[in-house]
Length: 229
Image 1 (tube, one colour):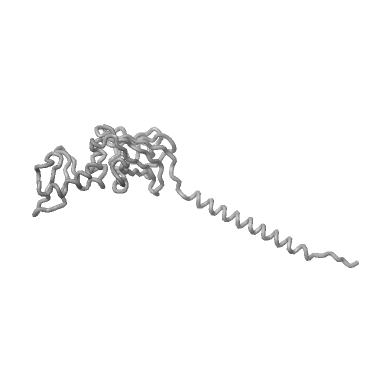
Image 2 (image 1 turned 45 degrees about the vertical axis):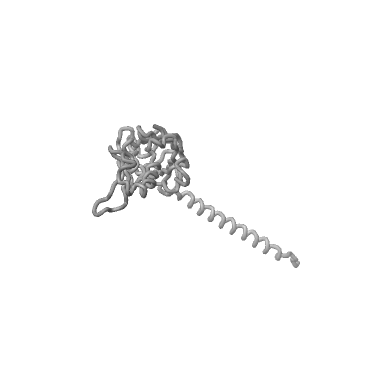
């Protein structure tokens, strides 16, 4: 007895099934590879950081909630707010010097690598910057390259040599009589720098921005800090 079964229709079905299997395998491989890449990337901690700034008492930075942040990966950036003038933030953004920051006992946090014995900045922790370390040349060196704060007040160093001696113009103590020949040339620049300093008492009520981030450039938290007396 002769069989008349037609096997030609089986080949397309088998081919389609094989293509589906291959597609599923490829999709699984790609998905697993992508998942591996994602898990290998560092993710910034989620946290809320707040701060205070007082001309007389200095600065505090507090962890107000969220995840712990490893100290070896924590950086702070400051910039002047719009109340300091148009585009002030563009010329005042700078990293906060970590050596200025201490714990409540006055121990340097980033050089010792701990806050109260902990290697991370945890919820409830507070960091401190003393009033002295809040002086403009220390806290805002990019703003105060030409400023010196001391017992005699704030001075502006003129970038001009007269022979071998640099001339200093003390605008705070001698605003009109001292070095009158160069006062007009340098007064506006000198005073403009001082007006950008957080610790200038005339800036009480203005706001600057504190940003916490990691060393990979990820932003963890941004807050506004109001300057108080």
